[in-house]
Amino acid sequence: MEREAKAATASPSSRRREREREQMRNLLLDTARGIAAEQGWQAVTIRRIADRIEYTSPVIYQYFSGKDALVSEVMCVGYRDLTERIEATMSEPADHRLAALATAFWRFAFAAPELYQAMNGQAGVSFTGPEMPPEVIRGFTVFHNALESIAAEQGRHLRDPAAAVHTMWAYLHGFVSLTMSGRVAGGAEQGEHYMLASLQSLFNAQLL
Image 1: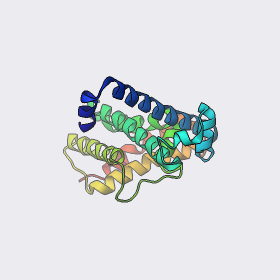
Image 2: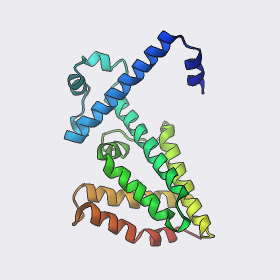
Image 3: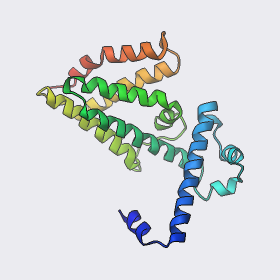
């Protein structure tokens, strides 16, 4: 809200500079993701990003303090996207909502593996501790609310909400990670089938 108010009162030249700055930030994020998609997050460096966009490294430091700060922003982008997808499943029929939630999680992960990996610490940046980004907090909150809503549709509630959120998230993440690393014979199609097959029984175990 404060940022919007400032934008509304800023001069045309200030608004232009802000747009240009935002465009540059997005270019840097997209470039980092592109390198990660091609070579893995270990290959992403400030110098390599600079070379890719034909800028010098000091220019990038005007936007991000270093690789960790850039990866943290990528992570936040991912959580915003995943949260929107989870929210979209809330309009699904009640008897299909749990499967829709899991499918949305799965499709998000495989649509942008490098983004999913950054969200889950594989780019070297974690999100534990008091400085957890609001996008991460909101993502888990929306996931929790979705589970509560599904339980309520069945006339039940979560036995231990925190445990249910972590159990269901870990279940989905486990199948995604195993499948991404080639540990599931049959690939993504078989991995998704396995994930959905035991989903309801695991969820039922979280209910009272």
